[in-house]
Length: 297
Image 1: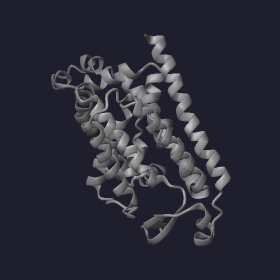
Image 2 (image 1 turned 180 degrees about the vertical axis):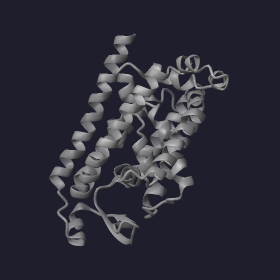
Image 3 (image 1 turned 90 degrees about the vertical axis):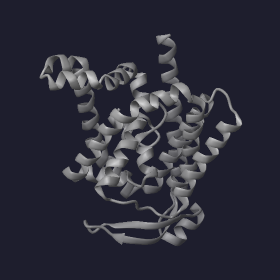
């Protein structure tokens, strides 16, 4: 799940479902409730640990943390060395994810269509606004964690995809790589808050407004494709505290103009192949998930 959540477009929730632990995960998260708090404050630690399925959660979270720490370095290296190919791979992942989620809307209506358009418009405006930077204040890091973690419990939606939309994907990966305790700790607290606060809300929305909610999410995913377009021209940039050049304003350009403007090889053929590989990966995971679902039934 940790490896999946590092890659935009691949959902940790999907991996949980395929591996057969999804229901246990949701039940364990929802078990952190008032009863659990009462047990904790009464110093009934053993009863508390059993109530929240502590062994399961600690092993799962340890595995997720290990994979994120390991894969963040690999992803950052690839983004620095082969950005066009990596972003193309992400593009294919998100296209496939959107294609899979759309059929989950079992009944289309004027309302669901409008919500889908709204989601598309919001994500697209964010993506094409040109701003590649969002606040690095701790409150925004906390908020990013709270929002992104919710994607983990939704098969088909990636937490890294949310971080991409918030322009905090590479920032968080760099924090993990550099062991920035303050940023990692703030992000983790946001994740915990998001899980405990939003998991019940998400469960309620999916149970009572399933089609509307899925339509909105689908719109977000399609609208965000502009964000991961592999070929961009940097209009302005800044130097961060580590001496690295960070783009502030970018615009999408065609791969044919990319080399003339940036001096870099657009790697068009390899990028197309990477996009198809990303698309096929999601389709394969989905087919495996469907097979698992039928086996359970």
